[in-house]
Each structure stands twice: as structure tokens, then as C-alpha cells.
Image (cartoon, rainbow, N blue to C red; front, side, top):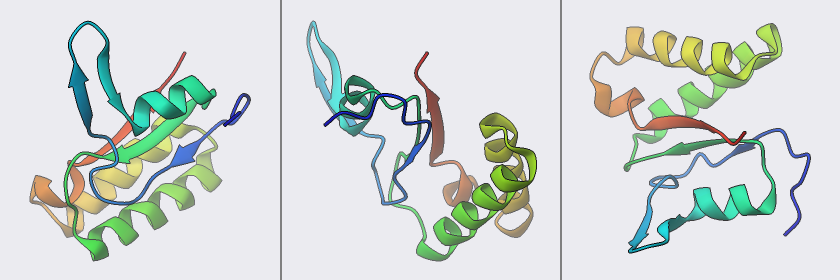
Length: 101
């Protein structure tokens, strides 16, 4: 798959940021596959997340991205806003933003 020049890939399903550790090679998983395909930025989750919290996070993320136009700010703001509704890290801590430079 050729994703060169793709600015952002968002995988909002559960455990999309996990992979298998291969000695001498690193971690094989969706993150590595999207990096090799050429995506520049990737949003994933590290564990099984609550459906309602995931939907809320993604909505907040896209709203912030639309308003501010910067991934880092949009991601951080979405997490901070979600913390107000769900203080427990289980609901917001699974989401990661990986930037491939």
C-alpha cells in the first residue's frame, strides 16, 4: 500500500497500537505497517477502550483539528477535554499520536 504524503491515519478501534516484539527487528504491528507505507502521523489505541469514550475522543479530536489545524494541539486538547468527563485514565490514556519524521 502506498500512503506517501498521507498526513494522518486514525485507527479508532481497540488495541490498534499494539504489536508483536520480534527480536532484532522491533515491534511488528499496524504502526510499523503504516510507517512503512508512508503515513506521516498515526492515532491508535493501546487497549480495549470504552465505545462511548472513544467516540467522544474522536469527535473532540476532529473538532480541535478543524479549529486549530495542528495535530499536537488537537490531540492534547481532545485528551484534556475527555479527562473532564472521564477522570479515570482507562477512558483517555489508551490513545496515542505517533509522528513519523
